[in-house]
Image (cartoon, rainbow, N blue to C red; front, side):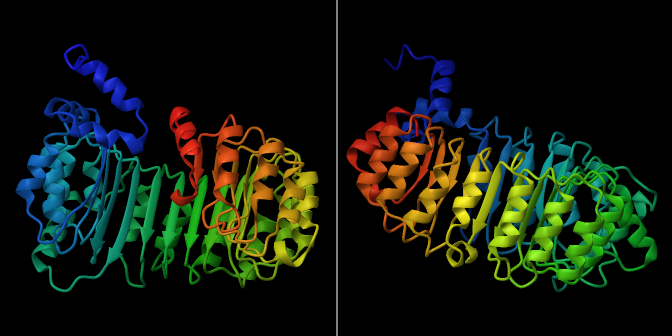
Length: 461
């Protein structure tokens, strides 16, 4: 049999195997191991300490078609990791390096050895310079965590010399997605980056204290907002008002907004009422900064909303949620009410939502620990188009809820019932056997019967 199966046929078989089974083929023979490695395009490695580059170079050489690589290691090995990746993986398109800060010299080597790199995630130390981006002509996505490291004078001197060599001219980077984490007051290297990002479509800011240091830098930041379609602000209380105010004035193309863990009631309300964009996705986790006034404003101003996600909303009531869902009942396809006690405080809320949201495709009610079968089933009776359902951490739901899913949600493709202690193995088996469109189930392994395992394996669930 092994002689009949050529390398190309083996490669095609390996690509079609489910993840849980694919690693077992490496134990069959050295030939199968070689073919399996050759078929891999994505790899994630966590390296032990101390790290040595020689074994990594040898290991990566077995994956000639690797296009995505994620590396995690302790210590100060980032430079060596990048040099190893640059030497062994010329076809890389995505590199993620979760470890110590990277200096400029390895980045120069990476830009030469991996000319097709489109996505890069790294850690950089201060003082900041982004002019090395000029050498990455294919880069579309950049994610940077900023940190302060003591010493490093040689690296700083090289960075300064490289900056002088590149000059201070305006550039036009190809970046479409930019993520920055940890911006502090006094970070002066950002102005050039804002001026050079003229094609941005997505901006992510996390734990940032400022975005600019003077009026000129602010103007550069505002200009790069013009074409934005997605913005994510996480733990950015110090700058959220300024960013939202500029978005309302400058970004008519905005389609998706996420604000987590640090907002402003007035700033958010001002954005909602003044923005001229056609927002389609709104994702908020603002326990102390979100109330019904915001939801009423969303219902009035964002009539095209197709996705609404609310997490840990302490001051929101059923009245505000109903206002949004009634106003958008013809467009809303995704709804998440995660850890929202309004689900538990107001009986009948889910029934009303289900009756109005007949086009709903995705529903997430995770971590509503007091949610009971009666309330849940009264909603999904009306949600026959559901494709994805998340109930993680809903401890009071029982087998009755699973029976209702099978009966009323015949198009389910993905279900998450992890940490649902009231749902037992027999209900999971019923779900797997009778949900014909099912492709993914997240559940404790202890709740999988032999029958459920066999059916899941046969249908590649």
